[in-house]
Amino acid sequence: MQNLRSSNVKIAFLSFLLLIGVVIITGRFFYIQLIGREGYVEKVVEKFPKASVVKLSTPRGSIKDRNGNDLAISIPTISIYAFPQLVENKEELIRRLSAIPEIKERDLLEKLNSDKKFVWLARHLDKAYAPYIKGAIKDTNNVKAVGLQEEYKRLYPHGSLAGNLLGFVGMDGEGLEGVEYMFNKDLKGKEIKAVLYLGKLAIGPITEDMETKEIKLTIDLGVQTILEDIRDKIVKQWNPDRVGILVIDTKSGEILGLANYPTYDPNNYQKYSPFHRRNFVATDLFEPGSVMKPFFIGQALQKGYVRPGMWIDTEGGKIEVFGRYVKDVKPSGTLTLEQVLIKSSNVGTIKVARYLSKRDVEEILDKIYMKDKFDVLPGEVKPKLPNFNYPANILYASIGQGMASNLLNLCVSFNALATNRVIKPKILLEEKGQVLRENIFSPQVFRWLQENLRKVVEEGTAKMARSDYFSIAGKTGTSQKFDFSTGRYSREKVVAYFIGYFPATNPRFVAGIMVDNPRGPNPYGGTVSAPYFKELVERVAFYYRLEPDKLSK
Image (cartoon, rainbow, N blue to C red; front, side, top):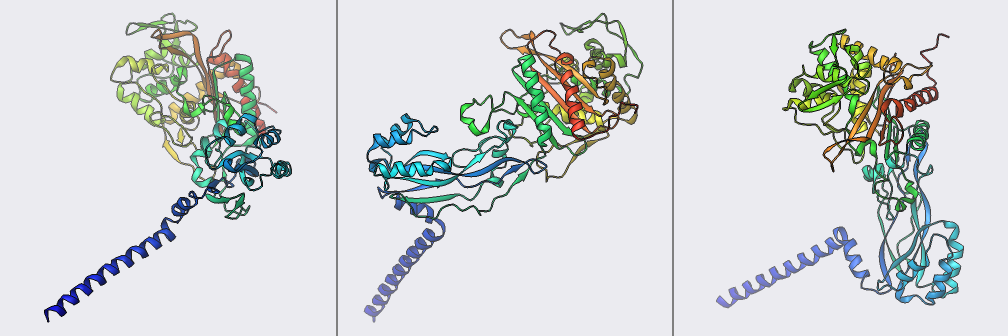
């Protein structure tokens, strides 16, 4: 009886072990089939000297402007691959293939002499080369060692146009910078890994009917072309380090055009440094200078600390601020509050800012969204503000010193001066507009600011922005660049601004021009940026067929 029990225990134990084994084998089978199949196949294939698993670039969704014009598309190309250890007549093959302009002889030599089992000799070539390449492979007896594979290449039909915004795509079809990177998940096609064996594709070729998602940007190709033409004129005249130009729809927040200098052609991104590829409108911070004055003066009016028509002694254009002297470009005596803004008096603005508390300053900067970023453009950075517990920082900030912003934030903030609202900017056309702040100023203060910002152009520091056709309102700015080597503000290097909106009687667009370190006589916002703002206004307004609001006819 005891032996029978012992036998039953052994049988049960063996059955249990057998069951465990079946579960393990079955689990491994399902893992390979459902989960780990790709990795398992790769491990097996890599053990064969005459086969390799490769990742192929597939078609991406196109990027279009608001009107459906192509900004980025995918086109079919061919790539040459090889199994170096199997290649015959290397010198002759190199000679034949290097006749193609895009292929360098030294690159082929290095790749064919490598210890790697598989190499790409050249990628994304024009399909017109296919007959010649096939002939070279056949003539050198390398049909089983060298082959062609169809892939897709990113093409930017307009070259460098909007290049700093669009970004570019790498060899494997992944977005690496700009919009291509930011929306890579939406744009990228299905990832395909193919098994190449002795010059044959074990997995079928890429087909053109693969599903991709296109995206439409708010950019208008016509506006973009205008901005880039104006940018080129600025560069030719002033030879600056950087230029940023931006146009936004005041009602929707849609970014209609965005130009940068330096720029680059994303079709040949490898030839350019990272500096050339930056989107300076969003990625770089500069002290804004006098473009901040309307907000500080407006806040003092809003709080009732000052009143329209109030007289302010500008002390001959020089004032001491906590041990440092601040001067006006054009010294004056006693000015009205309106003249302080129109003539852009540093001394007058600082005297107004003395009324403001830390809470007042933080309140207005929060209202105009100068404390954060919008996360709508790649590489976007938020403004940097000083510690307003120190009264000196309030006074310097009122004239745009000791704080820093990108052009995007400044233009969005100026929407508060154009419409009394702050709209979140957007780059995707399908996104809904979003009002971030409303009723920034009382109706009385808002009207006062609009009236005097228009006078800035008609009779103040921005007279060179005056148009005979359209009313323009805005503010010049000239900020000295801080020299960290000397610990002082530079006397030669400045950033010149004009930021405003148009038509002033019924604001449709807000725009800004920023010129970093213009070289030439009188490099101020009123002489560098203002004249080109006038050209921007007239060309964009006529492009949209707006009715001139300054003609009696």
